[in-house]
Image (cartoon, rainbow, N blue to C red; front, side, top):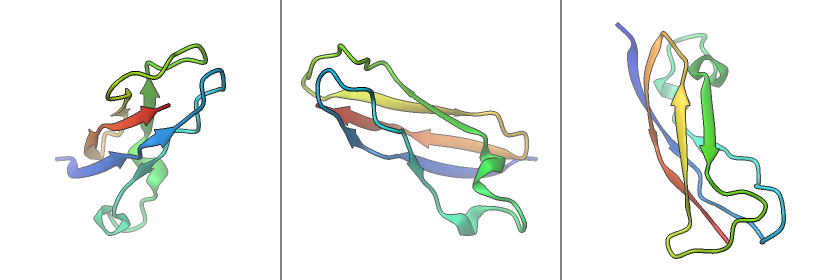
Length: 82
């Protein structure tokens, strides 16, 4: 069965009218099975914020998914603020 692992989407900030920053996440490398790398988690992060998004209370969620068959990944959301 897949190994369970949790990653944290990193909080980010941006200025109105600019592209979203690169979305990143944090994880504990010791939770990976011997020889596996972060790429094996197959994490994809996204946010609903766009270039034209305005600041809003609470910011915009940064969420993620994983395509890994070897890991059951839980992505804890982050926040994109302006």
